[in-house]
Each structure stands twice: as C-alpha cells, then as structure tokens.
Image (cartoon, rainbow, N blue to C red):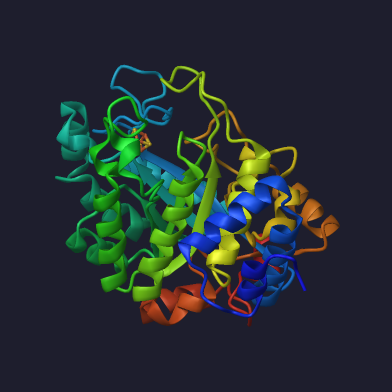
Length: 385
Ligand code: SF4
C-alpha cells in the first residue's frame, strides 16, 4: 500500500484525472520513489521484463524545411554543408547497405514540405520525377520493401490522402506532437515560426491517422520551455486520441538537448530528474502504452530509465548517424543488449510496427514480415544479432 491515494487508485486501474496527475507530479518532485515504484509495477504488468528496439537505417531524404523550430539543427538551408538531397540512386545504395547490415526498418525523414519554400527542393523532386515530397516517399517506400526493409516515414503533417497512399507500403508512420500547448507557438517561443507545429494541426493529423487505422508513433519533446502542467496536458492529449482510435503504437519521450548554432543553444537541457518524472507520469497515465526514450540522448544513464517505466529504445542504427541529433551517436546494439541485461531486461528486436497492430497491416506487408519473424511477432534473433 502506498501513501498516495491517487497512486493506489492507478494500481487498481481506476481512471486518473488531470488534477490527480498534477498532484502526483508535485509529490514526486519532493520524493519520486512512490511514483517510480508504481510506474515500474505497471510496466512489468503490461510488458514484462522485455525491452525492445528497432534495427534501422536513417534515410535523410531531404532536410530543407519550410518551418523553423528554434532548437532544430536538422534543417538545412540550400547552401549549407549538411544539406541532404538523396537521389533514387542514393536511396538504392543505402537500402542495399542497410540490408547487408541486417537492418529491419528504413526510417524515411524529411523536413516539412520543403518544396513549398525552396526552388532547390522543387528542382530536386523534378529531377527524380516527382511533384511532391510525399509522392517521392511513396516511391522510396516501395523500393525499401523490394529490398526487404520495412518503411516508417516521418515527414511532418501529411494529408489523409498522402497517409492513405503511404499505408500501402509503410507499416507505421511517425509524427511528434512535441507539446499540446499553444503558448509554445507564441512570439519568442520555440514553435513560433513553425506553423506545422500548431498543436491543433498536429492533433488533427494524429486523428486522421486514427481514422485511417494507421499505426502511429508520436511523442513529446521534454524541456523546451514548457510548464509541468503543459507536459502533463500533452500526455493526456495523446491518451485522448488513443482512447478514441486505438492507433498510437508508442510514445517517444525525447529530452531536449541544446544544439550549437540554434537559437536555443544557451537553453539548459532537460534535467534528468524532471525527465524521469515525466517518463513515469506517462506510464501511469497510459499504463499499457509502449514508451520509448532515445538512449543516445541519455548516454550515461539510459539503462536507469528502465526502472521508471520505459519498454523501448526506439530505432538504433548500426549504419547511419542520428541526423536529428548528430552529436549524440547511438550506443552499439551490443552495448545496449549488455546494459539491458545487467538491468534485468531481455532485449528483443521489433519491427517498426508493434505486434498489437499486426492485424491492421495489409496481407502483402504481413507476408514479407513473416520471412524474418519469430513466433512472438519479433524479429528472429538469428537475423538481427
Ligand atoms: S524540427 Fe522539423 S519542422 Fe522544425 S525546423 Fe526542424 S525539420 Fe523543420
């Protein structure tokens, strides 16, 4: 029996209100031990002692972007050295390499509709035979499937038609909510110059994905100037959509790390104690959700997050850098395996879609997956190890 009545209620599967959650948060700031004990128990109950990851290759398809987020170092201007414009040939070559490394996921990432702002992006699309970035992504996804990799696209706010098209080839797609607070799009705030990050727009896209029965990865960027109320509200916003459509397959909690040459370079990173409390809060608000933190953003302590409620490390690449956080390289899979084991967890490689959602995937895609799938819906050990 815990001292906190609200946490006892959580353990009895009772619905938790915003007010309860805020009280739990405030208590945890003073002493987080009861919150952590609860989140750990819930994780164990719904996920056992398994922690998953996705063995991926990161395809930095085009990193021009019509928006500007003040923390972003991924976005490139046409004249910058970091500009990436992958041609069909580049994609083909990288897919072959990814297959050689026995990657499972082809993560396709782009900036937000670059062709709406940059002539260079329009020319690049034209040269490769396409009118829009989503059209190009649909083609790249077909190429990935032909090579035996499974696409997961993260290309910002897509329309229902674009998502419908990608559903033919992508086992899931991704769109970070970041935060549901309108305050963060006001002047002087991180998303002021990023219209695509208006919470209403993002939530609409997430809802549309739900209507299309598209397994969806979303998440929150923690530590960008939000208040605890706003981050808790964001977790509830994701829960609300998931309660309605049942399509959120995982929630990524990403801790903000300041990047050089960005407007937020002097802002402090999210403190580990704050971040851990948010991770544990997410587990108690959504006890059965797959919850992920990127291990490269907590390089010294990622394994300690296993005891506050996570059950997934996200995509790890043995081949490509994390182009969104290039200064934080991914730990080696071998090392993650070892550290997970030391913490009492069994590392398994999952597909970019979780087994709970296999029935939503087309017969054609499922057939391709079975070639490397074990009897629990994970990737066969002999394939990925
Ligand atoms: S975070 Fe995404 S939307 Fe924002 S500027 Fe970077 S690429 Fe564009």
